Amino acid sequence: MAKPTTTDQYAGLGELTLSRVFDAPRELVFRAFIEPEQFVKFWGPAGTTIEPSSVTIEPWAGGRFESTAVADADATEYPMKCTFLAVVEPELLSYTDAASGISSSMVFTDLGDGRTRTSVFQARGRVPSHP
Image (tube, rainbow, N blue to C red; front, side, top):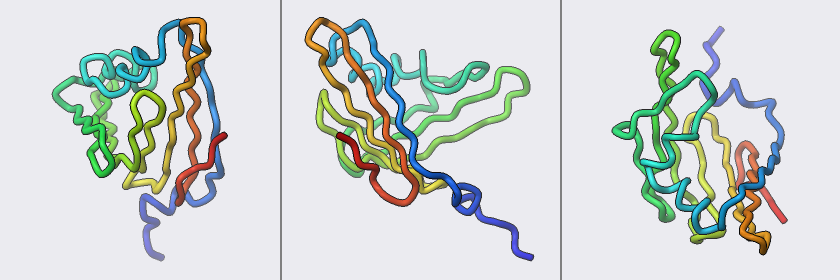
């Protein structure tokens, strides 16, 4: 029996939507996702570290969105290699992950009171729809 490919392990995934409200203006929140020195402060799960030298963010369609998270406990590396599909500053980041085939769209909504809602829409194999 053939070993499943990395993409096969994600075959059963559906869609995911999540949102978070930040007490900061939309432009500032958007910049945190495209400036490596800010990005490394919050990206990745608890218990991992991302060194700025592992981050490449080219915020334009076709640009690279890459980083390597390193587990604090055992130094296991978790690389992320994505390609931007669309970038509309400060409203939208859309990208796809080469290994999983998962596409994500991040929508930054100005709530009008100095706060920003960031909504992430993910789906495998296509660009996810969002409102």
